[in-house]
Image (tube, rainbow, N blue to C red; front, side, top):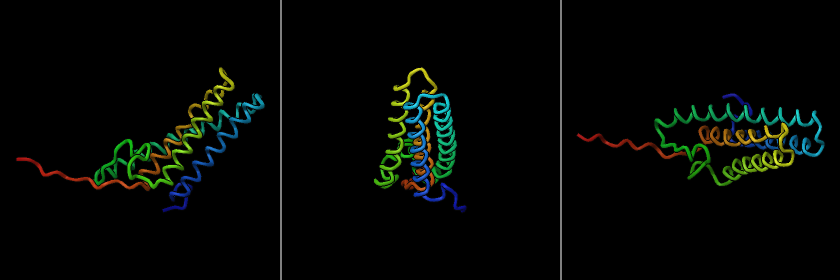
Length: 151
């Protein structure tokens, strides 16, 4: 296994918080300075968060499909870390990052309505995608119970 940015549980959480911080910072600068350049950077960051979130979600979903042959995986557990999928600390971290992304996206779009900051609404896909990726890679799910066939 390579030692990439998503190779461990902790590194995955760090990457999500780094993306969240970058999104919040770029959005705040675009709201405060309201210049074309700052809005362009904020849009680029929001679209990058969206794209990374899509890749993480699809990757997580594909891995979950493979794991579902031996484990019971619900969409709530995969997407929102419901049940015993993740420890309370991990759940707080990943759901917290998603909540911060949602608040920042709505605040930015509300502060400068009818501008390119509306693209910020796409950024929370990063949080949802990271949750699915984390759950599929590091989550704990109950074993699948095979029921005997009736004759």
